[in-house]
Image (cartoon, rainbow, N blue to C red; front, side, top):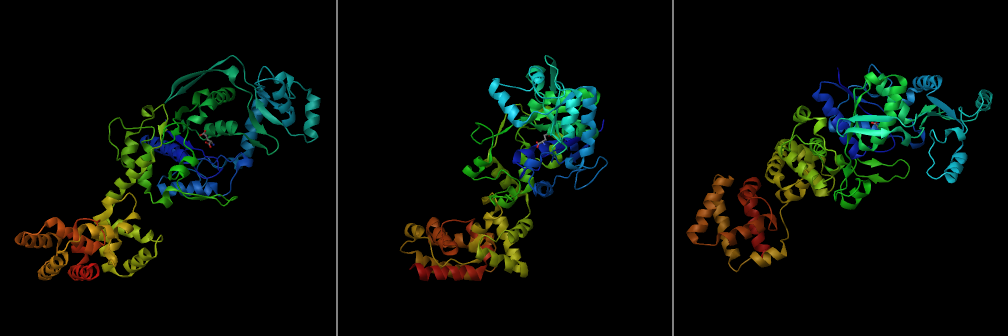
Length: 513
Ligand code: GLU
């Protein structure tokens, strides 16, 4: 059997990060089995359609490096992949159900339905109530025709047989048994826009597109019994796809479903890319714009609800695809530990070469004018770029995001003109100026200004004079950096170069004294 899975988002806004995880699991499953991964746009709800959402979805997966084998942007044997372009297909299948008496036409207006709800507690449109409603089961053939000819709008509802046991065999949740009496006669089709609802379109398309596994969020589990009934009504039980309902993504604290508000409250994105609401103009942050590497996002998401069975965490896409198994997905919700996401990004930054990081830095300098100037210089001057490469290598271990390297590295490019007051108070001793002046002489004498050689010579000098190593190193650092931070001091001196180091030490002596 050729595995075929689909990701079937509704273009109702930006794609939530939970949707990205659903797509990723489908993708990994397809890769593992050498199958096909299909994008299907479920745009049958015209009320909720948001323009730009489909483009957003495609761009997001492009950025993540998740490729579809078929889809509206790629075409394929089962096209069209946009449900709004498949209207005649659904009509045909609705008619089949009507003809077989497995569905019926209903004319009840919203007001009439509302009145029923007020009249009957917990009203449900089903076997117990359908015969008291305005539908093709209760009206004469003539009245039905008259109403339709008069242009009255109607819906088509599925006719659910009560007291049947429906068994959902879920690959993650196991066997779930449901009594059909709890199901209602869901609307399958609406005359007003001649469009099917999700339930009908989903089943017809999964069947026609030869989908073998439906991997989707847990919120769809309650719809699965209805879907199974539809497969039975169409006579497609033998080719029915296997179901796998993924656990919810939970708030970082673990109570309740992850929402956009959690991201706003705690400061992390819940969307892959930044999104601007076309109506309100409101902007929501995205992982891409926040500086996440796509591989880090995917690795992070892959482990939210699944793990390889040991404690390995950093896994390439190939490893993930090899190891992935629906049976190993967890049944319970996965806490969205966004700090872990930052940790993954840190790990993936470390895996980048220093050249790659420097190149990325050129693209992420816009948050500060000085950074921009340095980036411009690096673009035009190879020596500056090479310096950026070295600096990146030196400070990358201190950051979670590439752009944070700028703050860590700025002193390599711009000499301090002021010195952190607290550090001066604490570290600058009576003899610091004399010692630093002596140090400049030592630095002058060093011929090979590498970290290793400079360190050896400076330490020799300190020892021969019986100075305090700590005192000297602290003020030396203060002179070079302007504060008590930064990487190993002789790594700094090597990158700054002899001339610049001596200049900075001399200037510190003048200014601080
Ligand atoms: N269109 C549905 C959604 O937006 C698809 C659910 C499914 O995968 O069946 O999530």
